[in-house]
Image (cartoon, rainbow, N blue to C red; front, side, top):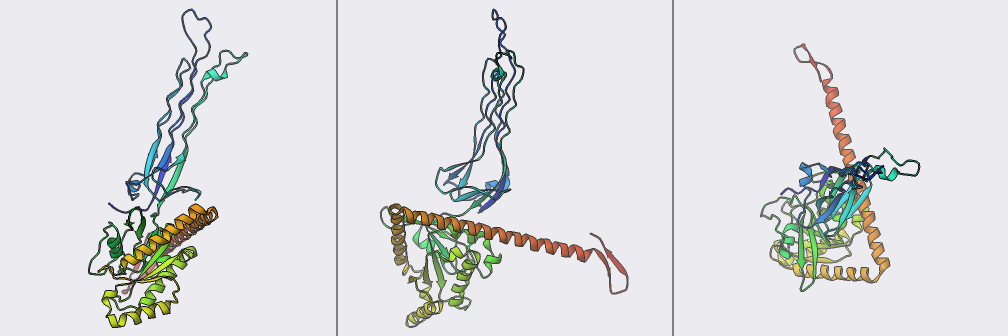
Length: 402
């Protein structure tokens, strides 16, 4: 299944049914009064979070969703039947945005959470409602109200406690395979993961957290290079980042420079990202001779000016991996407990993630606008180049038309 984390769809709630004009016509009941019923309510469009899906691929193929209209009213003061609501299932972690106004309608971060995105129209009134002492035989009714029509943008961000970041081939996929049941592709040749992978890390009885393997970033990702900003946004919902650095890159590059590339990309894309708690993991220590390992790791940490936690691991052999996992679990548990016990801390955390979400969304949209502007300039230049006359080498004039 293709991993699709963005989709634009159009939803139309059902229109309300019409009220009707009707009069009682019964034997032995002279001058029967009005008995026109009201129209039924149109169906709503509701988005619901479902943990059985992890992609928005379905919404790339079907882009229009319409709820049914309510039925018209009936005689004998019978109201028309209301239409059923329609439910659109999306993965947990989906943000629903009004594509015309840019307003965030809501975030779906828990299983079964529902979000009303388009309200069905109310039914019209039958002529019974217009009866009065001076108008005992009203012949007017109202039409049903139109249901809401909206163009929605669905954005999926993985919901995880820990995000794995690093250059391609740093060992992120192998790390998540070591500690969870996730099975991203790994091999003994260089390549980069193309989709985020989620894994649940079990740390003893009733202790677990969710880890996300974010696809490999490269220099210039915040400006659209490589996979660009497409997956960089997924780190926005993590509590902390696990920065994995290959201490012995296969291409002979400098591990210090490689680590700085990722830090710079995070800061360039959204400064709030760089402020997330980070842990440095010096990986692939099995590739370094024992007598050189201490010196190399000390050099990397010193050159980076790193003052936080540092771990040394070999994701191939599993060396040092458990220490990282237990440290993460303890830190996450402390943070969860503090959020439960301290409302001010919980509110500060919520506000921080809201700022981060907003900054990530604004920067992503700015990058898209810049990309569209660049493509337009490129097309305009091509048109200008072809819109005119040109002379070939033998002096024959060649005319190019659009």
